[in-house]
Image 1 (cartoon, one colour):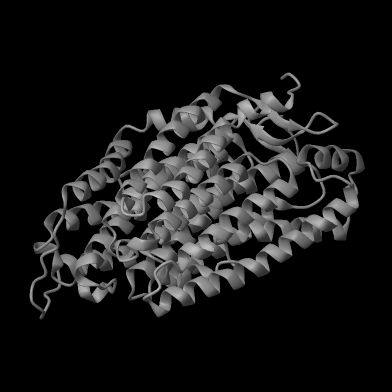
Image 2 (image 1 turned 45 degrees about the horizontal axis):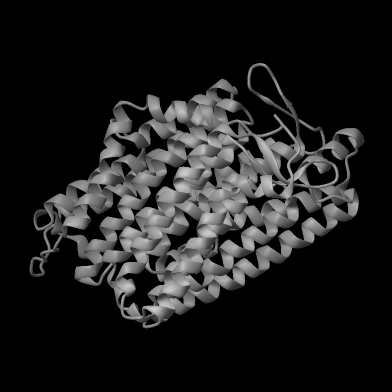
Length: 500
């Protein structure tokens, strides 16, 4: 690893630069060619494609960008960050394709420029989050992501629940942001540093248990908890997911959650980890029992998410609680504090991307025609929408974690990591939670195929683009359920965090 000047640092952040240029192009194109708004999503897709090329390059890097006097950087360029950037890019590309077909977004045709600019603002914030190694940059990147998502959550103005979702999101986000900033200020006051590597060096030399330090760390983690919808920071999720446009709900459920986990893992690993053992387990500085805290949070999160989902009649709200439950499963992979646990987290996100986006896309296509997201309105639809019904069945079975879908592999690797760490009781609780989730997923399929509707049959048109996107989301769920070696290898190559 060689010291870098400013120009070399710019070379390392080429993906972020391309995204910024694309954002500026979208704004300029929207201003100049106001009658050509249908071209905007294709400009975004081109920008994402070029960004993806530079992100793939980063798998071969392991360096700091924008060095401070102690030769530690504001940003870290490593395979771990590159992996999450790929997740953000793929998710964003699908969301742009979703938006082309979304009646909610089409109805706001005069504001498409702002819509795609805000999406690019979100992904830029996520990119910075996944590479941040400094508390100030972490906070600023979270704010960039949050401010864009607040506006997008209330983007459709003709819906009361849309404005309500946006307002609740801003209030909860502002509170969590304030708590996090207070924690950062306390930590800075104690250590005199904001760089995670410098803070780590000081903590290793001090090894003193301090209540004030613990409070500051918990406040910072609370800010991350808001982004990943972990109990008790989940209150915004059901209301915002239900009220926001389906495209944005899907985006928040995957990309925003992934960004939150990326920054949480890097924060814990760099700030509190002393080293990694030969067996792949992380040695933590003996200041606080992070493992017990994360296990308690994850168990409560998955249990509340699954049981609350049982009572939901709105599909978006049900998928919101399902998303909370999945955050609990993923957090268990983090709580293992081992390379095996980290592999299971990365693997889970690859699979979760396809199955969760696919489920939301089917809901969106049906809602475009019926105007409803209520589970009872799905009664008897199975015969009139055979393709959509089969796709939704596959995706919901995968979300449950049943073979031969990829969702089974995702949960299997979480359980393997728990058993390797001798957390048998926690693994049993996670398995029982998966059994609970089976009920509310199967309830949707029961309405589709086993319950007759007293209404007139609804024919839901499916365009060529809809078919292509659904196949692109569903085929990987089936393929990786049988042959998952490539994504496991990608996850193993991506757990390298600079400095460890």
